[in-house]
Length: 64
Image 1 (cartoon, helix red, strand yellow):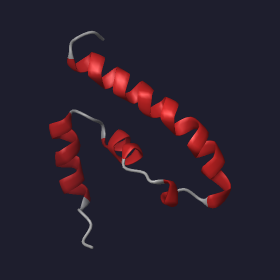
Image 2 (cartoon, helix red, strand yellow):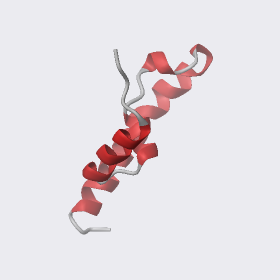
Image 3 (spheres, one colour):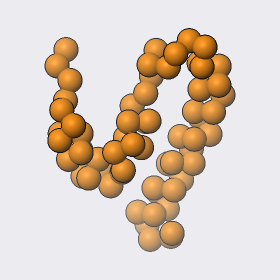
């Protein structure tokens, strides 16, 4: 499978109104995380994703 280059990902992040690192984080899959860090990732990821969703949903509505 062909992977997008960084300029394509940057364009996508701009169109979505998300910083590129946030796009990277949201695209992570458990398999991308080292096995010894998966427990921590699985524990923290839902809270982080909820915080990101809340922040960017409210920011896009002008409630920042």
